[in-house]
Length: 561
Image: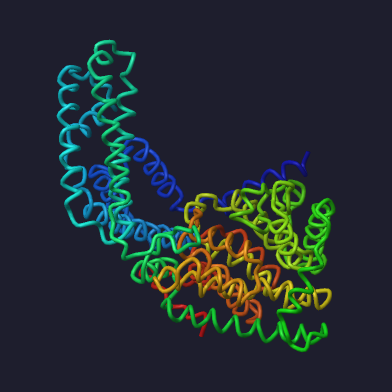
């Protein structure tokens, strides 16, 4: 009984350390505010939405500035800095999106009666059904008039602008229809008057929406033949994204770093290929390793064995604390053929999603999947996906400072997992030369991601050029390269996500050098501390480790230098 009470007390102490800082109530309130406002203002392309969220960010930044920063604990100060940075980022990109909206909002110059209708519906105001029907009839005439006007107007410069204009009409249509369905059949008079006018109006809005989507000049390529359609964000927004992630480097400097990292990998790959007897021809060595794939039916169990090996390794060398519950709760599933078109390699988290051929694939696609998921490639990254990687991250994030999960940044998420690829390479994790080739393949890929993702977002490369780069310079199977590029630009990933793997990994590696090699922490202490701090820009975690968090904190860590 005494032991049980002691454990309860210990748990409460841990909860206090891991959950509560002076900023916790403010961050929780802000999260609740955002959720509530998104539910209330259901048209994200409207004046009321943009103005209300502008006020939200401004009000919270003012409130933050009035808080007694100097009296906060060091973790409270850390939360303050993370929260402030987050608010400034959200406000900046909100304003940027607002400017883009204002540039095209005239396509809905007829929208006011519809906006009044869906806004008053929120309070269930009973509409004057006959007047509303007449208003909708008049709005439809204005829609058709505006449509004819736009046909004569100069097309938009880019397909992105045309698509935004189209979406302004789409969101207006959705909000209007949602309000209509609120009253439909519950109010017989409303239904009698409004049913036909709104059906006709919706049909006109849909036609106008479709027209706008294609109303652009062919000066900017939408599809270069790859079938991949992303949205390059341009140099200004790249620099802003880097600023808010506390990466004090230009896009050009990061491209040079990617090229430098790639050159190192290539040199190491040549050494490995010489060991294998291919006279420095690393592409032949890569082919040799790819062809060591295993039959489909045997692959899942081999992945499980590699997972167990990775867990045993970090525990045997006392590199990290791995809770028993984390080891108990991971599991496996298989990836569908459709999903492999976007994610050709296995993914991880609490569930490791194994990628391998299915019967519905063509013979060529089957071979690409098997060759791309050979044991040596996979052993190089299974720890990235599960333990000590993404599964352990998610496990810890649910239990330590969970309010920081709002501050998700790919430099922390992928930086930690990529760092382990660096660290295990240094520790001699590869069992043989084929394992080295597997690890180097992925390291080359991470370096290539820096180059191709930035060149794409700077408008210098098309998706097809990115695909060719991965095939020619990294040695990807073409179908896998296409899937990687599609995942990068059409998925739910932010514009810096792909470069964040290696750049974030370098940040963690350099921080480890400071803290561990500098004699301030043991390696295990460093790893345990890092993984229990939850999401934030890594430079802020470095400042926390060094107990150096002035209120006017500014990013300045030149970790690549």
